[in-house]
Image 1: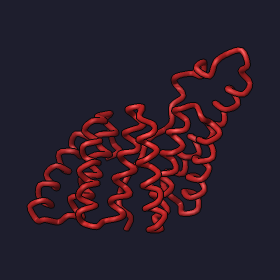
Image 2 (image 1 turned 60 degrees about the horizontal axis):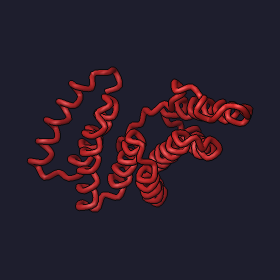
Image 3 (image 1 turned 45 degrees about the horizontal axis):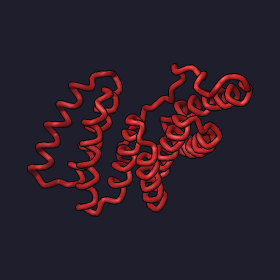
Length: 192
């Protein structure tokens, strides 16, 4: 999916979703909905992503799939950030974090922390963002997670933004370049 063949991937996911639903394989339905949500995020189709993650959350709760519930909540949190709904994003992400910690899913716990960092960064709360990114990075490094470099980049960029904010006494915090955006490549796949 990360080779920018999102449309093709989405078509395969849709076909798989129909088969999983026909077979009444709820865990498969949930996983596919989460992947469709991720594909939609990567294509910047945030309303569609929200719909897929919302469906995944419903399926996960009905099936008693706590991991799927946590991952779907993380997805909803990431989409809420894109819509600028920060309170909603925090609520989803904190629910996800609690579930994923309870399950011991370290990779997805790191993803939830990374999303909380992104929320804080988007609100120019750079010290809080750094704290969350550091927590995510520590987890990613400890388990060899593929998002380690992304977390390092987020942390470094946010430290630079904090330095600029602190050194700028005559300029407002809005003078920080708009091109400084968090790397938001999140994959909400299931662990093996």
